[in-house]
Image 1 (cartoon, rainbow, N blue to C red):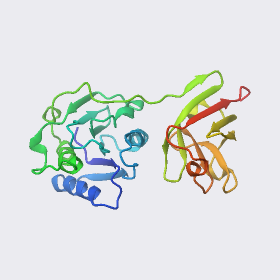
Image 2 (image 1 turned 90 degrees about the vertical axis):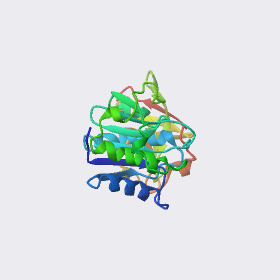
Image 3 (image 1 turned 45 degrees about the horizontal axis):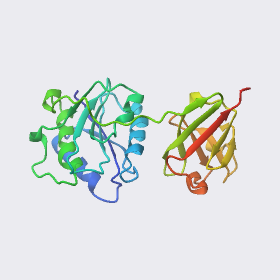
Length: 261
């Protein structure tokens, strides 16, 4: 699936030259590429947050975009590197579950183990496969490398399930699955589980009813709303909810929806 779009997601940050080196390899081998930076601020080694941001960013990318996702705490240990495709997108990732939640949006139709070493850089660092393996392979695929030249079909790649909330009557129990850099706390409870009138409990703090915007409450006040990804989130206007209430990823969340709503 030829493409001119490569979307990068990593935990490298932008202080060091890692992202620039990957882009250099990509553009050296495929100068016409358009590179999209989804984020390089994934918390270090946080595969679940990477999976969440990949899932939520994917639908907004141009069709046929190839996602190169590098959050790789076991780099150099023998874990595989995989290529996968859905109907509209392609992915290159360490085989560590990072692409697990893609299927919340589109079914993965095929996956392959990347083993065509003729595509790799001549000297491969044991600590930087993003530059030395993934980037040159991504450039070759973007230029139209046939799928059967990537490597053998793979059916047993690693994945972990999306943590669906539990609904019992009018009570929904969920958890925090991401915290953005504003300190907004994002849960696994989607919009369609809720009504505007509800009572929320998180970190022993009660909030009532969904608000429409961050500015719906006075400065410094906490609120619940449906964020841009379509999930329930908790915020403090012009503040940091996670820090204020000592909320961590995995913290429990409970919503009681009004039966009169």
